[in-house]
Length: 191
Image (cartoon, rainbow, N blue to C red):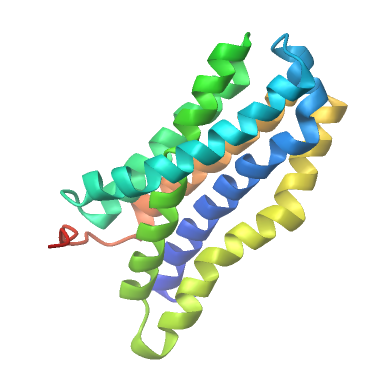
């Protein structure tokens, strides 16, 4: 693989982790509800809270991160992702789990947007489209592979393991981004 492709792979791994953690709770609602002492409908609100966090967080976080380089922004977003998933894995009550899901969701939209820009900037002109597609392929593979595996882990062993696994994915993506993305200029603020 060429040097720029490792950076794109690291970002795609981040989108894989984010996609996995977004959709995995749907298959784990009964066990999560039991684990945080809530009803299944209340646990379902955790999915809505994540969506609201993405909706509100994406534009605000992206705008805030324009003062930093793209690489730094992606690293910060992976740290937020890891913190949110670790908090999910150790949650002992509904409120803590709800807060952890909102924290995790804040990394979602900004990571996809900044990651796509970075992929496009890394790739040679004739590969820009496939570079961006590679980033979003991580999300597709998450739905096909990541969600079923983590759902199985959560139903078979403990739902907390599923969130710990996605936190580890975030750590690996962080390391990959840190090592494989070149120093990048600061993002320009929109007028």
